[in-house]
Image 1 (cartoon, rainbow, N blue to C red):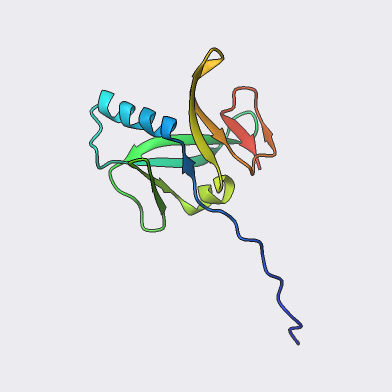
Image 2: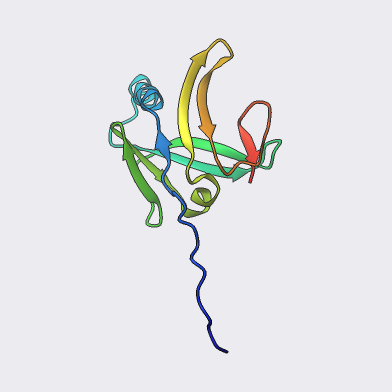
Length: 122
């Protein structure tokens, strides 16, 4: 078998972006719930929801060996490799307008989202 050439794959931005407004809210949640400052925000996905995958947010005392680590606006973030496949390039924001209050995932890989914005399909 002869290799003629290689096709260069486009680079995927595997970083998760946390807006300053979302970071302020994460730090407020930690303070309001007495969560130790060194705990890391874990962002992930799990199967379920009306569109197939649901976003997961939580805090972990430490990251796992294969986690991807980021830090933005004073918040340390970890994402497992499987979740990163579905949410790379996502911007996590926080909105507190007339239409509701909460974290908003702006995921460029989401092909379809549900009405509540908590689940998606890729």
